[in-house]
Image 1 (cartoon, helix red, strand yellow):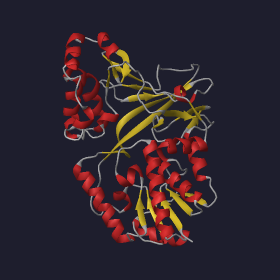
Image 2 (cartoon, helix red, strand yellow):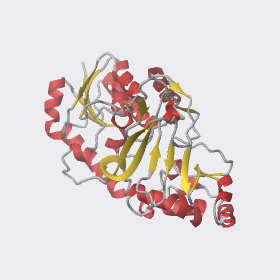
Image 3 (tube, rainbow, N blue to C red):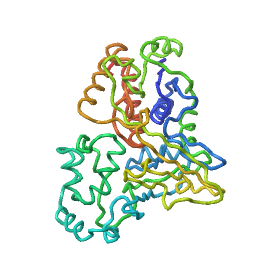
Image 4 (cartoon, rainbow, N blue to C red):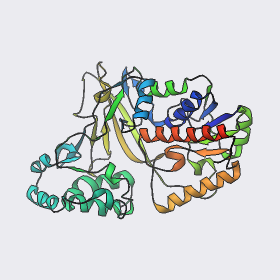
Length: 381
């Protein structure tokens, strides 16, 4: 009977374990933190539910993923709005035409936008860098106010060095003045008492799933962990350079540090769940307030001030050389572990910038491919 070792107990690892369990395949999930859940885990501070790693909004076009998430824990209807501070005014993000008149040089901005109304943004994302893509979409004035300072604070490098491929999902100008960030048909935030922790615990709480926390497994001790678990297959959802001991070099990641503080005696302290602060005059990049999404009724609130440049692995910097290096790590691990024994899934192992629904979709697909392989008695990776 096949037993699968899953390295990493975040959303991807938890979804993998759930999917395997549906077909009776047992698994052991190894998580190096004290609790599973990774960056999506929710916590409480003075009774207030909050997200210690920044805001996560579940939004998707994938009905199967939505049905899975909502079958594990109920979700409340929540449409995500983001505020942004521009010229000392609180405006909307994405950029709304109705906000242009609240800014200086409004007529010039409108002329720049009108000249670009017919730009095929999605097509251009395949051929330009991030800065060129944004300039072609909105012109230099809006770019210099909304995009350039925020992006360079976030990523710690010039915007022209970044890929434009993920830009259409993150940057837009709304000609219809729709204030909400995401257009997906399925959107929400967990309605249970523990937020996303209920989703993680529900996914992992299946018969045949064993979770071990405080275990920092690497390639050097993988065989011992697999023998201890009785596993003959492994799925890695962890950063591959770290897992491999940096043998081929270090991948570039951009980390953040969210400093959360309790604010007593108020229900809400800001006008939206997330407020962006692009100006370099602010040391933080955005402020999070989970109560907008959770709808929790209690005294006080929690604000999370997000600072960039922390030594953590939040966002892969998707440059060609980093993509090539991660591919080399995958090839190395197929050789070292066995191409028939190892698979990769999720943001960290595949070195991709993806949303929660994409993490779950990757996990469902990876588990499904493994199950198909097992049913055929094959050994393809």
